[in-house]
Length: 366
Image: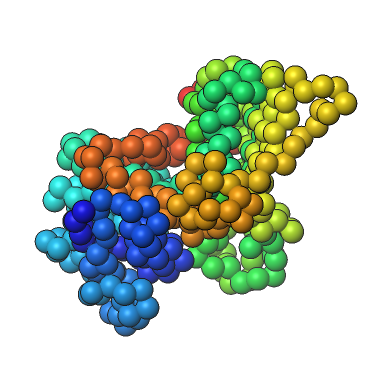
């Protein structure tokens, strides 16, 4: 057991989540590497110092370059805006430091490819943050699919829908400008990652992407980015699929949901009820056929370290703690594990294909 100095860039929503996770992961999973909260970076010295005090870091800075170069920082967590990811990752890799980067990997496919190349050249451990696929229920769903429990997969339907921007009279914010901040850049990566993890590579797709509120107050003539998107697809294994994304889905708070249909059964999951998985088995007696609700418990992946009681449940923060465990294990074993930067790039590749398809109005091969 030894300490490892952690530097986190970004102190807001995800910066806090990763700070809490690094504080808790050693106790939850009894990791061989024990994080030491060495330095946090934010946009100003004042905000950085506030985050330092709140989260328990030793030091604070407003210059990410200073954090990356500091010799006491042994691993870097990027929780800053998408357009900053590439430069930070390349600088850390150049110094031989492992990097965990929040999704999406890069603001563009070009950025993602450059980040993958930098990771490969350095040989450093790298990981991208897709936390929702780490719920015990979704990990269990993946096991069921891989084991053949529901037979050959024929159909996948996935959505990531929320309503945080459903009020068209709300003034425009930074989220409403730039492709990387639109629904396809912000929400779509999570469900695309889920589809790739649960079903496999996407072979071809046909997409439609749109803006519902093009004239939000405060936009001042600037082009507002996408509110909604969807695509039909064919997976490499032959399964068909449909994925949809929206930040204006009135009533949806965390609509990360999917259905998987196989030749022997089916699976349903909804993140708003993240501690339950619904399973249908076609070989049940006729009178008993129907979806059964399975409450997650100690028998399911990564549940027991948090709680010994089935049905008691895990939460959002626990997903981030599981990510921290995986990152620390990868560093300890010097082995990059899923999801790597390459996996993050594959998500960006699907998004780029969706934009190309929507623009041309045609099916696009990947």
